[in-house]
Image (cartoon, rainbow, N blue to C red; front, side, top):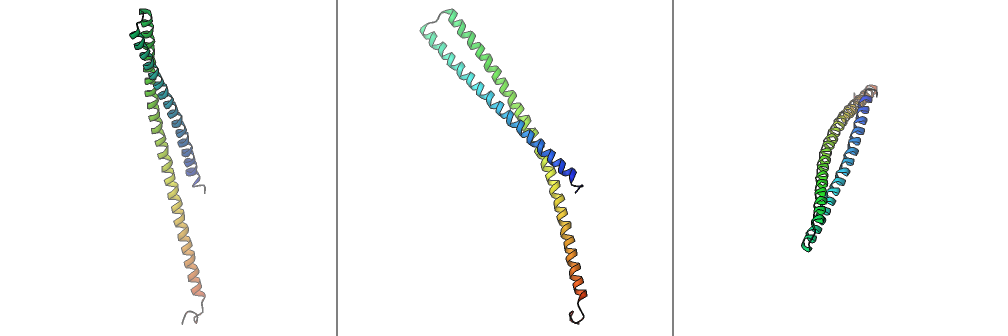
Length: 152
């Protein structure tokens, strides 16, 4: 059993690392979704505000109010740009987390494969020992028979 202990420990550590990587990936995906929602909200608000400006211009607008609208639209454009950059950053982090999760999963699969091979080898050894034992039992049984029982 002590020979299997290190592999079992490695397998468990790999499983924990894979699960932690999966949790981190899920958190990053949630953050990415929030950033996407924020960007969509800012875009809708900017469109709504630009529509208000158009309507105000059709009705007539004084230069100071026009300047305020333009300043606010410029600040909304800057916010949209920042939100877009944040979304791109989140996308890159999600990709990195996905790659990390894949690596951890691959490591776990490797350890599981080694453990399965070890178990299969032990099963084959056990089967051979059982077969030898059965062969000995049969051989001993034949030797214990009297010559009359053996057909002699």
